[in-house]
Image (cartoon, rainbow, N blue to C red; front, side):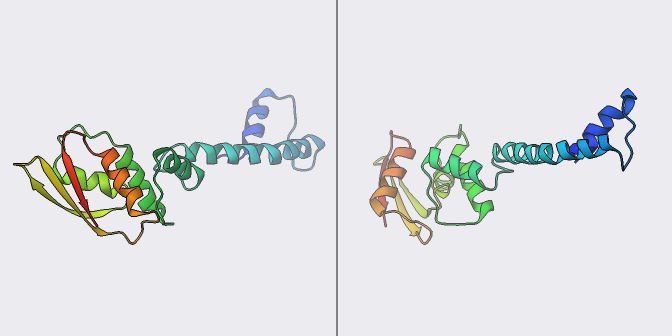
Length: 157
């Protein structure tokens, strides 16, 4: 990536107005401006990176997690990104066993699913809650609010 100093000198050189040498006053003035501009460029680059899940490392992930009400007790950026991608993904397929497992994995919930088709019921057995940092009631409500309303879900911990 081009620095602010390189960008300024590259734009000024073709004009022929300034003679840009290492020890002249204009070069020192440009260096002073470019130091501050470089800080702005770097901050803008960081903001741009935080706008997208795949490049976010800090507040971009935190803001999306807060918006989606995902509270995972982990520092692994890859897992956080994957959880957000799963949670924001629009699932156009029918609610199959695998889709439900994917939806719940966005909350970092591991489970087994048993379908009772005759009674239109799905039994969800939570198998791993090691990374969960809220109550069972909290996650039960999250699951019920996330999954389709036309099916009865029985959640076991």
